Image (cartoon, rainbow, N blue to C red):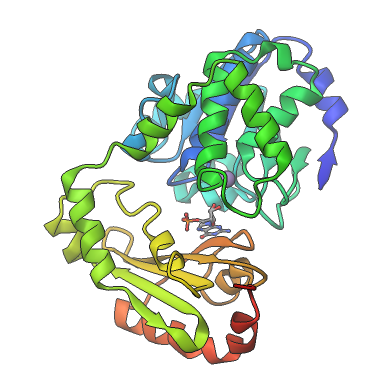
Length: 342
Ligand code: 5GP
Ligand code: MN
């Protein structure tokens, strides 16, 4: 764990400030929950706070309190740049390095004059002035809760803050089932329910908002599922054609990789998704046990993440990407077979 200049940060925040809060590109439940949860808390402390989001995020997060106040960097560029210009400090949540916000926004942030505060649970964070980094944490939302606790402010947590933080912890832990879920996670979740988070409604808002097209796309994805029993590995492919034929919307492929990992005996699940717009194959890696997909993604697919959940990309075609992936597996066979006691 890294705690850097947190006392100084507390002093800095002891008078009203103009603050910007940012999550990573293609934000997930944890990024949106953490940025909005922190914003609602900082608002209550008397600061002026603007949340910036690099690009669009899935519909199943659009109900979160405060979403309507966010500026999208790719759509509301002038407002974003203006907010940054007048800000005293920028919070970076749920990512570990500036390149994770993507091209233009990265360039803008690299020229930023004031300090950054990082709150994040990804491995190998870059260095910033104020830091709270802990890779053992289930989610950045759990860390925002801890941060509020460090500031001695849990009494300020209200229904809005609790709802945002609950959502991010829930989505990043696969509804409290991944290894990073601890008894402390559950205690925090219990506190958030006491503060007004309506757990049944949150689960329903996030999980029961499927479109017909999304389910058809899932069907198509499952048909593509391939099992490599000699490596305890399974993978799924989704092409641009699959997306187009099933009225693809942002977020529709979220969580699909978990079906590969849900097969009995599988410890390494992968999904390859063709992205015409970016001209890449976007890859999600998931594992059970000791096999580190963070290292695998970093080493071979220009990505990273956590030990059991990481992402990456390939500039090659789908066929070439899958072929390259399959060629790498023999090297990891012993590790994959020993990864998890089933
Ligand atoms: P997902 O597969 O859901 O896109 O990402 C899984 C995890 O890996 C998330 O925590 C995400 O932040 C991280 N991740 C995804 N893509 C990348 C990437 O290209 N680089 C790094 N460093 N992390 C990534
Ligand atoms: Mn996260």
